Length: 340
Image (cartoon, rainbow, N blue to C red; front, side, top):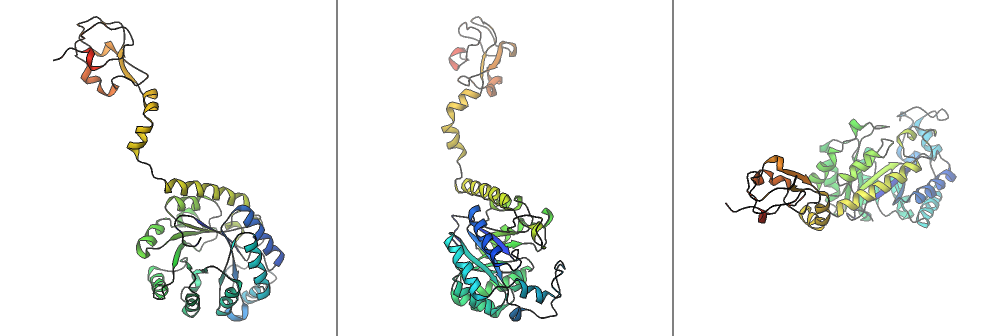
């Protein structure tokens, strides 16, 4: 499944949309499975291992939390609960993923049996954590949202040196992300620079960016999932609803199928020749014409089917002398004309 260019990896990110409710987290797993995605992804935050009281809020929408640290505490799960979530995902046929934000989170997720690592863009320079991930040999999926080319290149070189398979997501850290910031052009540059599978981690809140990415050859898509865009939290408006996810998957699969089956225009035209004859026109006699008539434009009409001379040859027919008389709607051929 992971980094397999013959299929699209579709990741529904729950992130912290569960708001610290274990029941809601399980409900999201069921919803993601029902939509038909490949994987469900969370974020494994352990407040004491990753944050301090000095960490500011990105968006202050949590009135019950005095600090960002308090938010991580409130929305975090115990290791035993992560194990339950991972087991549930596997029971539903989903790959279980979660972005770790500390070395301890990495250890917990190893116990959860994650099949790959998803690295949040803010963790690209966390080499101690990346080194531990690389030691597992599992594929590493890198989100490039806040990195410039130099930083991203250094991180990829760090991973490559450890001979671990990887893929890269184009990502713009904007919620919701407008079309002007999707960065679809980056997909091709990522593929060219790093010769790896590429994908889009989308925060647009709609299906169009994902469809465009697949059309441009992306083999990985990630998006936030929400039961409703009216839900509490900063990510809701940048998420996809279940109905949107189903539409995205349907479109993405059809686009991917089309890309895997390039057509040969000449071969296709050959197969469609009967239809070509049916829908195109021929040069015919506009009225009964006597033998010896020197054909003018007024003597010619253009009618279906396309079993005679093509209208594209009309200038070669004008001025020809008829060898024999013909009736109206006669389909001209070379045998009708006197040799020059």
